[in-house]
Length: 88
Length: 305
Image 1 (tube, each protein chain N blue to C red):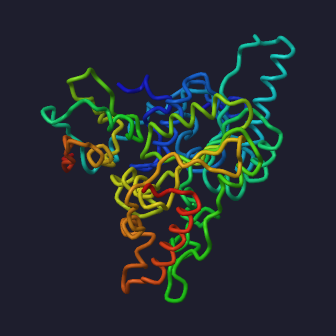
Image 2 (cartoon, chains in turn yellow, brown):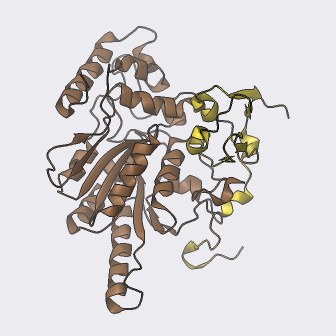
Image 3 (cartoon, each protein chain N blue to C red):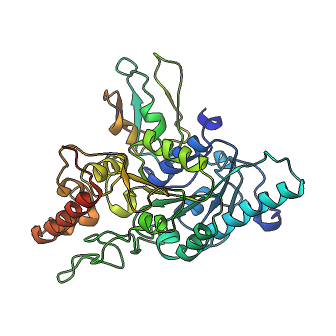
C-alpha cells in the first residue's frame, strides 16, 4: 500500500467498500401498506442506509450497510417497520 | 443507493445506533457540499476514517486532539489570505466546520476553542456531546453529568458515580461575545438544521453544542438513541437555546416544554444510571438531579405555561 504524503485519502466516501451489513442481528423490514413516506427514518439512520423514493412509496433500506440498530423502527410514527431476527 | 445523498457515506465504523453519526449527517445536510471539515481526535475521527478509507464526501482534516479549533482557524485565515492576494476568486468562501466531541471541546480543546472565538475566525465549531471519552472506553470528561457511572467514575457502595456537575460549555462559548451560540438535539432535526444555517450565515465564529447519545457508553438499546435525546429535552436535562451577541447574557429558549417530564423517565432508560434504581433506589440522588434540572429550567425559562 502506497501511503500519500500527510496520510491523504484521495477518494471521497471510499468507506462504502466496507459493508457493515454483517454486523446486524435484527433486520428492519418496512410494511409498504403502513408507510406514509414521511422519511423520518431516512434522516435518523446513522449509516445513511435508508434512501428516499417517491411519495406514496416506502423508502429503500440498503442491507449492505444497515447495522440493524433499530432506530428507524423505534421512530416510525406509523409502526411500519418491524425488526425481525436475521437468519444467516 | 443512498450513497450520493449523504455527505457522510455508509460503511463508517461507528457503533450501531451512533448518535454522533446522526448529528454529523444532519449538520452536513444543512451545510451542503461547499464545506471543509476539521475533526478533533475522538469517536467520530476514528470511526469515519479507517485508513486508507474515509466516509467523508467533503474535504476533511484531522491533526490532533486539542487543536481542531486552531486548524479550522488556519484554514479560514488561509482562504482569507488567498482571496486578498487574488490567488482565488473573491467569492470562493467555503464553510469551515470543526467537529469535536466533548473531550476535544470541554477538556482538551478548550484553550484552542477559546483562542479561535476570541480571534473571531469565521468558523462553525460543532461539539457532538456524548458525555464521556467513549472512544477510549467510557472515561469521564467534564461533560459527564452528575450521577452517571463511567469507568473512571464507577458507581460503588460509597460514591454513586460522577459527583461533579456538567460544565456549561455553550455559556462559556457565549461569554466570548461571539455572534452565535446554540444548543441542539438530534431528536429535533429541523431545529438543528435551522441553527446550523444561522450559524454559517453570521460573520465570525459560531458554536453549536449537540447532545448525541451513545448507546455503548450510556448503556441503552441501540434503537433508543433518538428517544433518549428527545427525553433529555422533554425532561429539561438538556435545554435547547440560542444566544446572539445582541445580548450574550440572555439565552433564548427555542424549545419551550409544556408539562415537563420527571428526570426519572430519562435516567431509567440508561444503564449508566442503573445504580440509582438497583439494588436500592437512591431517591436522594434522583431528587438532587431533579432539583438541579428544575433550577436550570427556571433560570432559562424552559417551562411553558
